[in-house]
Image (cartoon, rainbow, N blue to C red; front, side, top):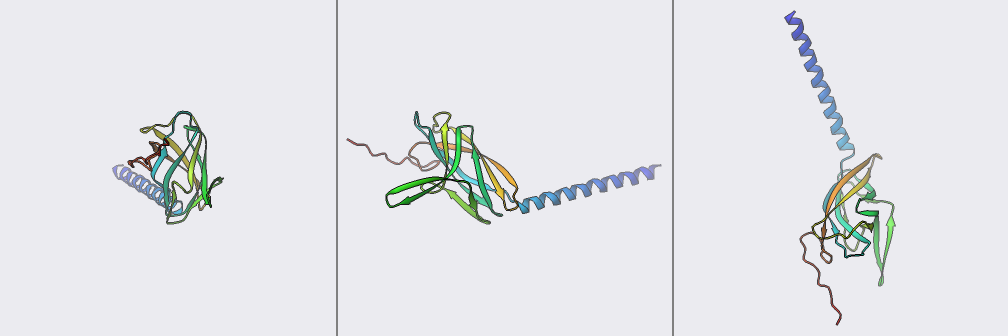
Length: 172
């Protein structure tokens, strides 16, 4: 009777180990086929009383390639990816449906370039606040993945977290 219990126990242990190995292999495969996007140096520009929009900046990195297809935030009624171009003395912005992060590369959402627009702000954004952002990506296999970001608010006139404010010219 004792030998039979030991055989059954050994069989159960082998079954559990095999299931664990299969699960690990599946998770590793999922990771390789749709590597996550890493969000670096996210920040949001602060606002003044009555201002209804601002911009968010960050760097996106992925090994497998992906497209940023949507952005949401409880701090804004509407969020979108904007392209900024300068033609002569005219700055133009337009909403993009998505932006692509190349495989093994990065995409900078930066001042003076593509960036995230946060419009219909729920309240004034002050230095020290944090803005939650949900970025939704589609990988090369078509799988959607959401990445949650907590972006610090920097003061109006600063060029990023910890950066000094740009002097504001004063007319006299």
